[in-house]
Image (cartoon, rainbow, N blue to C red; front, side, top):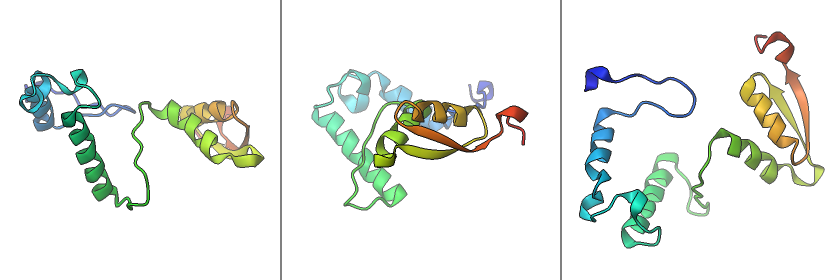
Length: 131
């Protein structure tokens, strides 16, 4: 099976080590003997609360997040982040400068315009984002 694995270098999903996938596969039908997988259990159950507590502990250690900062897990990818940044950082002035150097920058500018003014400090669209 390891010989059939494909390496994915695209944005978003990535290749996971085979050991990680095998552990997830083992726990998929019955996470640590609970009789259900994580996607089936209540977010209020002791097992799930323990998973999230350990996850936060590990993340704080890995990224050196101080105790006076909150860790907030949320669903979504780049587009959600493009909305979250202006929503949280535009402030009362309601404008931000963007470097539009590719399709992701273009999407970020589009999201910002929903909440305020996106000023282009750099726009390389005319050269198809090559300069």
